[in-house]
Image 1 (cartoon, rainbow, N blue to C red):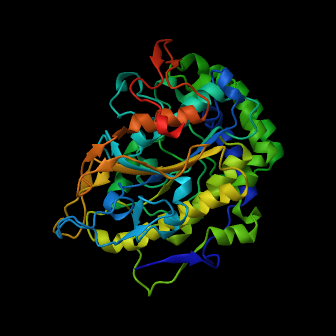
Image 2: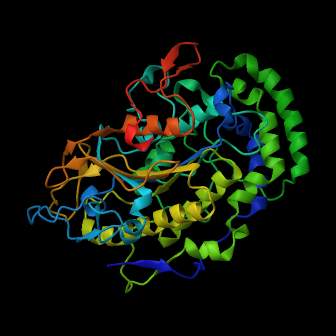
Image 3: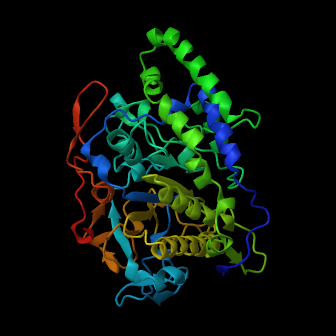
Length: 469
């Protein structure tokens, strides 16, 4: 089994330089695309809260029975090979892949009975609480972070409200969408591929080529453009969009209109760029988030590698700088083949990174204000297929939560003897997202309006999880 311990910083992790992000933002303005990402077209009283959310997408769908729902008495052909271990909380057991989480179980919430998965291979439902087809004729439901942009954003914000750092499939399939709220509340998407390389599968590359610009990252900056040139670009933008505005009926021009000033504020303040620059972090903290591989050269089943744990640190730095919602991803849980070998690497990597984030937030006095959620688009089959893998299983999923003032040591739900069905206290994806809104001080039952002025209940079928508030 592959295990991870705190150790040295990986030599092949190149820095995300502050200048690179400043220059990239300038290029965004030059391309007339940055302001739309920073728009916030509706202020409300929700803006007083400084609570934050970090959503970790376990891309591909994690196997619940191999992580948080061990079933040692299951039939041999269905049983996980990973032994159950006790945790700090009596009555809550995890598998041997999760020893660090077990040690802080009194601070965590374990969602064993998560139901209602759409069965689609993207992060849309994890971002919004809704299935992709809901209200699709008017753009679909907006992601939580986009709603936060809509309700809490301001042109005076010095950092974005919603930063989407997801890679791989969630990025290609544009999972964090503004939906019927329109492009003015799109997420801010820096390009982190220089440090966190995520090689796409061939099918994803083809899909990416067909999708056009909707998925793309922003802030791929040119080194030669100094900050003082931004003023020139803004002046040019004002002249050009007077001509183009009369031809636009998509809302894109309005998205750029009033919030160019916020783009300027963010790019010139340096706060966001500083938060994105891991080279500014204390080396001891870098070490806290850097797993040291102690295995014997087993080939890696994750395309990102152990350094992906540093994305959890990046998320912490962003919420510390004032970002309200951050989405990151950890890839390769789509274990149709070699599930056991792959989970020997992915399980400990996730366990290490999640533990590092929660304990770091606690040590900084931030855990009460930051809610952390890790989950995927569905679970995996109890039955092992003929390739030694587990297939998609939308009937039951899993999740882990921490922080935000929630009580810890909570186990929500029970499942059958093979971890295939919820048998007690089922929790829907929409319930979890409704709870996230509550954590931010947003009423999930309030009305929001689409671009035609029609009202919609924010979460029309999700209930706040009463055990957590």
